[in-house]
Length: 187
Image (cartoon, rainbow, N blue to C red; front, side, top):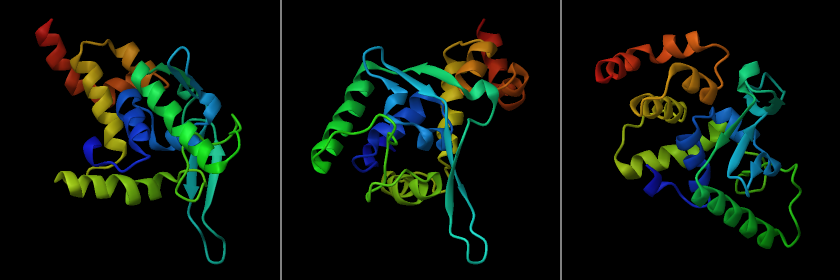
């Protein structure tokens, strides 16, 4: 999938894969959300599209993550910090002026905040098609893939729950309990 994600969105998809954040949380990230020196990303906001009714236009609504536990700081690889910094440098050079830390971390081609649904349509789906992957793979499935990888690596339920921003480890067990069974057999 990542080989076929078009620039400049590879770092965004890598963040989804390597952090397990929700697509709406990715869209809610701001430049200040990334600690480039410590290679951390802080999830504190989400950006959710709200459907339009009659004459009302589609709106992106800012808010907190889905749960109280959704406020979290997640380590990222150094190479991803470097990649995000390069993306921001290019954006600043194209704009011809410094970026404000309060600006969205990722923007669409016209400089507006990412909309998770449009991101799927314009970035994820074309990459799926080019990679020959099933078109019904959802952006949210990258989150599930991340949790599966953590469990496969032997992470405990509490650590997975914290990473995923689940309010309670029982949520993690309900969603991914079947995967922990294989870990128990290995132990």
